[in-house]
Amino acid sequence: MPLERLSSQKCFGGWLQRFRHRSAALDGDTVFAVYLPPQAEQGKKLPVLYWLSGLTCTDENFMQKAGAQRLAAELGLILVAPDTSPRGPDVPGDPDGAWDFGLGAGFYLDATETPWSRHYRMHEFVVDELPALVEAHFPASDKRAISGHSMGGHGALVCALRNPGRYRSVSAFAPVANPMHCPWGEKAFSHYLGADRARWREWDASVLIGQAREMLPILVDQGERDAFLVEQLKPAVLQAAARAANYPLTLRIQPGYDHSYYFIASFIDDHLRHHAAALCG
Amino acid sequence: MPLERLSSQKCFGGWLQRFRHRSAALDGDTVFAVYLPPQAEQGKKLPVLYWLSGLTCTDENFMQKAGAQRLAAELGLILVAPDTSPRGPDVPGDPDGAWDFGLGAGFYLDATETPWSRHYRMHEFVVDELPALVEAHFPASDKRAISGHSMGGHGALVCALRNPGRYRSVSAFAPVANPMHCPWGEKAFSHYLGADRARWREWDASVLIGQAREMLPILVDQGERDAFLVEQLKPAVLQAAARAANYPLTLRIQPGYDHSYYFIASFIDDHLRHHAAALCG
Image (tube, each protein chain N blue to C red):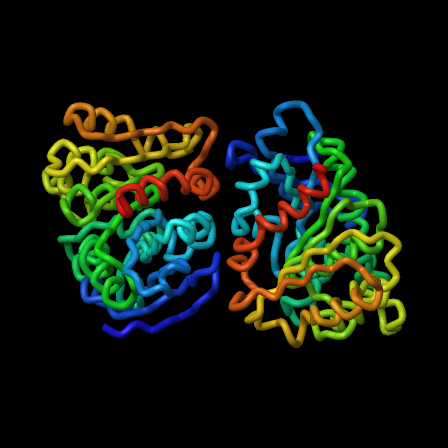
């Protein structure tokens, strides 16, 4: 799989690069960003944190706004950010042009329904294809961590919970924690997965956490003034499910913070250290 | 002068807020952003770093992408970022719609020529009106520092050099260091200031540094792979002028870095510490 390098920019002594390539899982071209810390030039394989962004985002939002490169450069962590959905002229989007479904809103699952199932396979892409690509083309080890924001927080939790052994560490910012019972999730799941709600359970962190075969400690930060907290995010459901399953979840409600990247930037260092402890220990 | 608060977002324990107000200097409404670190709630007046952004930017770019709030919160520095030009339905822009002149490209000077002189008075706004507003409405002291990027680096240097006593500290990232002898500057100055190049000298840091009545140590960072370095930025001219005048300028050429906010983010902490040493000492 050849990678076309779109850009390369020095950042905190390392390099932020963007690549376009043909994805088998997504049946089309896609773009991802990778931050290579200065240690990447020393010939050793480095652990990787995969970051999944939220609705409407691309590979760029996290790299531009989270301020994660500073500490990643210090810790020797590679950061990888994929796009949030398939894109391209033949990829169907929301029929009404809404921002909460379709393009920019792949929900990190593998769609089963027509016309979505041909391209909307972000779960397979994130869990299998992207790490294989990263580990083949960069000085990246198979020590993987995963995190994300909002829809991407949901994605990070679900990718880790569905794939024991694949990640050493997981965290999330303001995740859509119980998607089968919130408007964003219900819209996405009903299109991508069909009307049978029993199949939605396979893509809902608050269900999966009760069936977990692996107990990776989860760190979740949630802004207390997040406008989406009550209707869309529902961290209390995830917390209750974790308690019932005796699953190690740390949920921090951060007073005054909203849903934005200013919230993420404020706490990203804690998440990087959470992951580094698992990846580098 | 009433301020209309447009937003307020918690960030690193402090608050990032945006305000719209009527500006006398700009003869119209303008927007600025202020970051109040956590110490702002303790009743003491805090020093202020004014940040001037580059071509095409607004008050938002720096706050979203530079990652300055983290250390500002630690140091107890207020950050203030104005827009880069007047805006509004009656503000003339570039006749050809170009991005390097007019809207988003005020060049931080006081225009003398029709039709620019009515609104394009960013120097007066930045040096006088904005600090008066900030010091009246926020827990801000009159200990001021100024910095900026590209066109805003030019702005920061010129504001400091033209106004001895007004700032305690100045720095710049990739400043347009000799605007009267580069395409961006020549275009802007010929419109805003007219054809008489003798008057351009009052707005060119490489000229002003030779006439300085106050020796504020200047820190300049410049990316070595900056695509605008040779044609537009010309830090060597500033350095030669500083040497001739025995002016304390530290120019750091940073290998591999470009003109982007990834460059700024990589070195913003050094600049904040440079300013804090002068402001808090």
